[in-house]
Length: 365
Image (cartoon, rainbow, N blue to C red; front, side, top):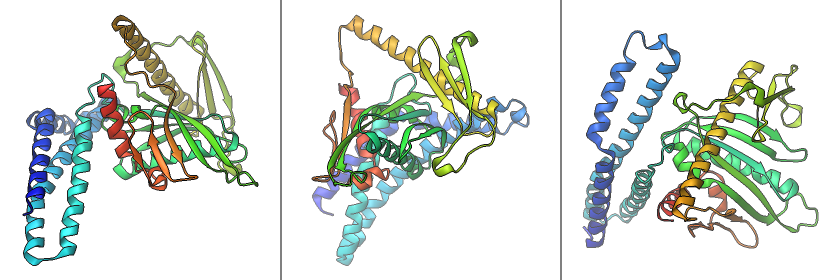
């Protein structure tokens, strides 16, 4: 085997071994065995909420173990692939082995970055909100492009998503949207996406074909759990109901089932029109409101800690990523300097490189 390839495989093995040590696979297997025992209990579903937590935790832990075991198996197989390619003098097989090595390096790096997520809320599901900002119809169109990007990323990884609310713009795109991503460490991973995203392109909505810059904001908060104790006084809420609507007149309900809740002390407004029932929509909207209040509390606690440390480290600034489609093709993260020359792939959900770089950047900033 080529000495450079052998050295690279050895380095990959050392990196993966350190990840396996941090994840503590023996403890992970023991935890899975315990959760499997709980899931097999005949009275499990007597308490549906507790049952859901057990089955969700089991699924997440099994997924984590499968992921690291799959990486180790692929790494063990690579030397055999190279040996077969070299023995047969097959250039195509050698190229295939090189491609698998590059893919494996990226996957190990992604798992390694997961071990850097140690925040209190990092393991939780994520609530993602996207809002069109400056740029008129182009901004609304860009907001919808970002929403699709995150939903496609989730789909690529097999992560379930649930759209709570979508407010469509008049001409094209969306004014805002809120959706949940359910996955191990979804919040910790996607929280690095928070900030203002900028799009530069020839506007498809400008009949003179001029270049347009537009902006959209992304907010990511952790999903609230029953242990969080976010108390909300009913007197602090204004609840409005209205008729759900979709683009082009589709999906219009005939009853006032959509719900908008305003938290008067903070001015936070959330809405949900995904469910047919007004009660279900109110329950979902309350979950989103609790998550946003939890995140507000976390930020206030962080601000107090930063004040004590007299440090502004971790300040994200406003604009965090630029998507340029004209006069050249480039997506660049302005914090990490990570960039890709294929905006179409990025907007189709290929954002793992940006997430990995963002997690590492946050750890060192």
